[in-house]
Image 1 (cartoon, rainbow, N blue to C red):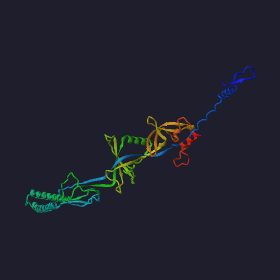
Image 2: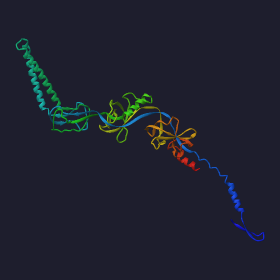
Image 3: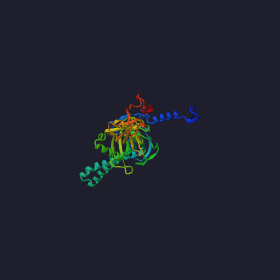
Image 4: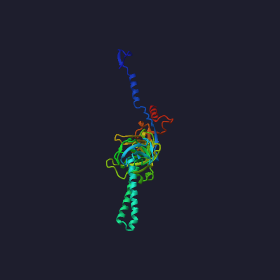
Length: 391
């Protein structure tokens, strides 16, 4: 404490200087009970999307394999040497068009011999007929002559068929593959190896598999009136090719298997798709999008407004009454574009926060604005909220 000398009295002595200290203490004491109250934090600005009930087309995309409408493996029906190949590999052929020529000389000779034998037996039967009527020959001899004539006629027909079979014909119209045999090769009737293959490529089949659980769900929703399906055999399908491009022609769903695959628990669906440009080839892998129907009164939520908690359950922040934030636990069905199809947790009219989520906490109050997308002129919600907090 500072000391001063007092010279007004005899005998100088030192006394403490109390005035300034007491004044400062009084000032501090008087200021302790009057702290300025802090201003409440400004409500964060967020962008919201108001969900509404709407009709939503329900589609399922599944991997599939393209199959030819008809496939015919061409095999010889008589023995012989291949003399000519009469088609261009990879080209289009018509039903009945000749593909190969087998050496016909032995079969032509057999046919001519059969014709001669048939003529001789016919003449014998004709001679025996009046003799049998006059009892000049026995009835048995006449019957034997008639039977021989019939056998000769059958032999002629057999020889004629074999002669025709030396011309190997295409059984169907379509695109023919490569030849698996060359001129000069020996072939046998009904051999295991095919000479070539013809496939009908327009239209084409596309076979996909679908889990039975999906079929059961669709039937249940259709029975409840939630799903409006197309008529039987008229369900439209679309294809996506291996390079990611969309196939230009729509097809129709033809049938589904009546039995379930025991190993996969799925059924096979077959679609019929036009192929006028021959873009689809047998064995090609595609993705088939089946338009199953239309979900009535469906609720869609933007994916950017849906997150997941520690348990993996989808959640969303919703602006409730009095602009107070609520946390909702959702149940989702599937993704449709950039949105989730919601089965529970949201109702028409709910406002889902899509921007400014980091500034919105459950129970806090916010200033909601309708989301206008990236092309909107307003400042993005997260920047607006940050500016408000700074001020």
